[in-house]
Image (tube, rainbow, N blue to C red; front, side, top):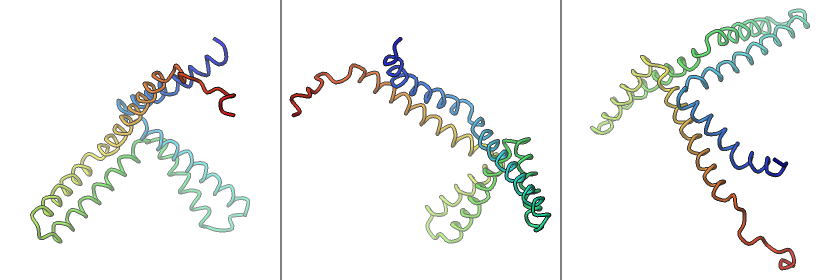
Length: 176
């Protein structure tokens, strides 16, 4: 396979196929992205904490805030690395609490029956998110996976359909 055919193959098939594989992974295992995000954030916090502590030692413990900030970042980063799905669960619970609060506000502020119905739905969804916090994360990442899968499939079909190239290539002499 010469260089141009390999480049054409990578452009036409490998890129969309990689997107479709990533979409399937997200669709079938949505917790993988939650764990990856939490792991990356954990490593970033661990490195930031080490940096804060190194700066505090180099400055001979000049400020207490840099020592405390370094210890907090370092311990939070290590905790996230040991428990990668806790971040997604915490975000789901926070979203549930916010939905409950917003639904309660709408219930008392609304005078229409439709407004109260939507408020009740918000409260029920908020309670579900508090009780089942990973649900929001799984639904969001599954929908993202479905979107990436569809984009990859459409790209693959489009590139395979247009693989022949232009039917009548432009003639340089005619352009002048």
